Image 1 (tube, one colour):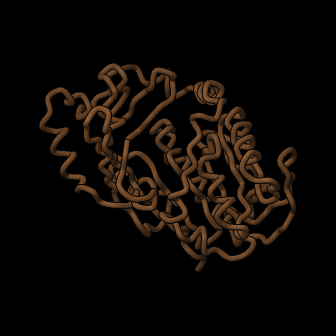
Image 2: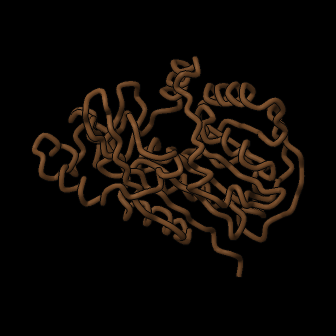
Image 3: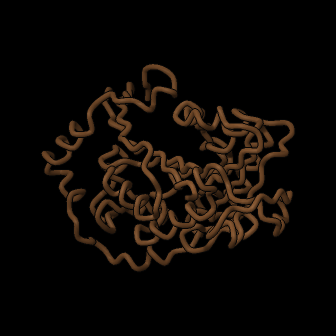
Length: 305
């Protein structure tokens, strides 16, 4: 696949979202993507644990699957311009494709990264160690934010519900101790929320809200409605409205702007930016246009009054 220009242009409008919407709605072969009823029993998927993701990262341990998301620093310039002692929580770090450009892009950021899969954290550390000689501003831990609270050392009870503490307890990779770091300045949710069962999404977003400092930003990027990956799913893979299960058992949801807006504003976030990123890619081997749709968003935790 080819796309004119560099990765920074991913946040662009090669076409209007309504264009691909009309294509889908007028193609009878894609009608199953428009049905609102559940097509299969959803209960077995909504109660699943991290095993599908453990297996996924085990299968892709060779490193060939890894692709660094360098474009994020252009999508979210706040990450480059931040001041000293900035703290960032990357939720659903996977193999480190988001973490690595963050560590390269700014020495001012301390990155805390979590994933529901311990295997993913192993892959992240391997990829970082291959790329950067010495790293002392990266810490990782296992957590499924859709079912569990973030640990208290990230933001204690006082930090979550009152004025934030200003502790500086140092944590390390193996024993992230109980000294509260006072919350984080940024939370990144990059192609993570779509892998969470839809009924768990509100809880997951509230967890992110709880560990942000007042005025902190949540940076969001995920699959948009009618992205080409959605249209590749067969009818039997549809487990709910805009919800799908892959053959490996992992889930994928495709967001419209209204759904994203409601999820975050219901959690008391303030919308700063929210739009579709629509990019036309070309598969030259098959001589085929492919229409990618992602949702780009920035949401802020209100300042204390």
